[in-house]
View: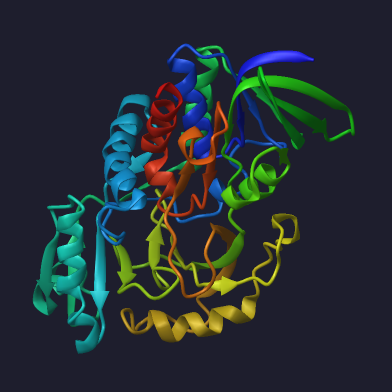
Length: 373
């Protein structure tokens, strides 16, 4: 049985950021990824937004790590030539009732450290985005977009430059606690199995993180949350949208509403919606996008963009949020280290949904800190 220093399970953006942080700290790192490509699940199926840190409960891990991660990510992208744009975002209220909620959102953002927001009236909004219809809005200048694919490959390149090794098409099927570390049984796509003994294991498997944790014999079940899966469908716009900023409605339970985001080429997409799946394991996820669900998007989008043409939305892609709380309940990032579960050398990352992309570099620093406590 081979012995390694650190095993990072999962090569999404968060896992790659963790692997980079560990490798830069001088640790020997092996990244174990079940798919044939890096960043091909949650990391490639989202809005690619760099969030400012507005919505999350004050004092939560999401608020803290998003705020810290935002500045780290902007600096990293600028320093490593990762395509990104600080385009800004408008949170729009399309009714007086929604407008009444904007001061609350503004106050929470300030409590989270986000001090650059501006409350706007109708005339100010039209001066910025003439096609936008709403009664009031919050402007967030620090919100942006990033090419998540280039980001993932850049993080991997950094990690590999410091000696990290990537193992694709490799699935952790079992783990066992031992006195020297954690024994991981890894199965490749062709059915070959091998065992490695890792002194440190970081479970950054995203949608599969609770399942991976459940395969580690000796880890108490009470420290493994039940997974829930909330699918988000995206639809692309035919033609060019008349907006230069992201447009978000006032948040709704379970998500941030049907919002308009832009890619770095200016192409607009709408979504995600919130579709709770009845499945219990991530392998049962279908990423098919039902064209008929776009019909409900038009009514929501027309609340802030009345001029969207009929038939302008086409199915684009879907992503699934790795929830650890059921519908109607909010959950925080769960970063469980030895002080939580009493297993030396093990870090489990559960429920790393949005703003996980924004927070990825800050999460990586937190993981390293937990390992040196």
